[in-house]
Image (cartoon, rainbow, N blue to C red; front, side, top):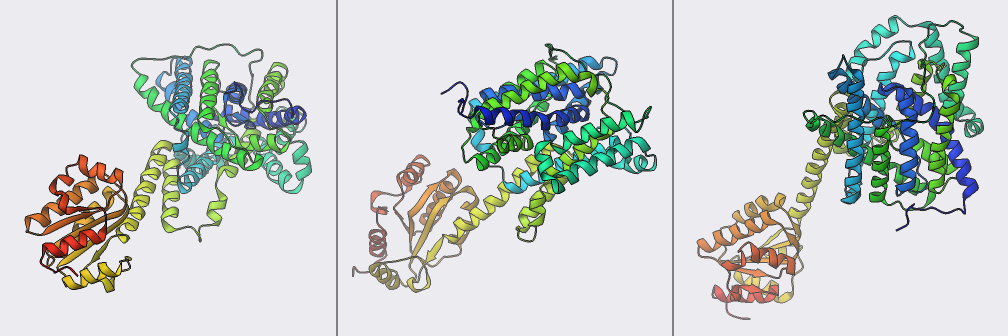
Length: 557
């Protein structure tokens, strides 16, 4: 396996331009997300540098660009608020604990990759993902309304929503003007000036115009600014780990890791669709884990594969890890030389940029298709969305997965039950029977019950299997036909055992037909076959029916 997946020098020019373009897009977003997280703008830049560089080198999606994303920033903001709030007299220690959670999250992602759980993350159903991502978009918008008009926002979306009337009744004019200017730029430039947007991305245009406006149009403005940003080479910042708080830190790190994994692999699928390539999901998780672990040691925000930056990179020509790594090095150069300029960026401008990010994250395509979407999908999406915004991110995903699993199980059970046929009259069944089989069942006149099963039999269908058999009480011989059964689980094997025992206890003969090797193995292991001697076990249905007929005195032929 190559050390750097997808590395080659045949696309060097495209990778250079792609990395440069991605860095231009990433700079204002990283600053904005750093501010939104509570860790400061430099934390956003450091996250983009370290996650972007190491995920590119060790990840499994060659053209992917990684860094702080909206969903990851929302989770990090909650973590940062939680741990700094624990130590109001020593916020530096709280911040160190928060970055300790980032390190743990990166380690968990590496473990996910080593355990090859990437394929399971891809099983999350679309309504759950849609509701979750739309909920994240709503959270970002709610949290940025305050900064857009000149106020600091509460960390919780519900509190931010409750504070909106107060924000709007006490608008800071300069900040609101800059925020409105930003919104106009980020929404209109991509729509009406696409060529300009390709040359200079709208967020960067907004950043330049907003910062310039403060200097020339609003000298001495009271609009809140970013303030001093550290410059120079990033220095190692040892994160803190507290044994007493470790269970809670792990509880915070696992959702962070899971969200980063989902976020990254979704972006990997987008990159595959554009490049017609195939990513390596488990390797991608390892690369993201390494990037997040390193970012935690340097006070950087956690990150994931960033869809907007990845698409920009690919459209600009980036195809290999060179572009993702170069984007990080360019960002490093920016903070080494332009930290002083960045300190004058208005927070309202960054809020406007993030509101655009929030609206982009919302799955508008799903909302447009609501009339064509099954009701169960709409319910799952809305439940996950509301839980994401107002309760908890991971509770939302867990609830959505449980709902999806239960509904999927119900659909599978319905299909399994449709495959069950109880046959006493061969003219009233769709199960294909040979002429001889039909003659035997007709001759029995209801004394032989052919119970035919097909497909995989699971615990969900077990109860109904027994219930359907219990509806018949006039037969004298039962033929259990498992020739079309692909698999039985423990519960369904116990149901078969009960069916055989109940029939035998009332003096009825029971014959078993067919069964694939894995089915027979399960039945043998659970002692089901022990209830039947060899004369009652058959490989063919006709043979079982013939023996059943003989057992109740129906003459051969």
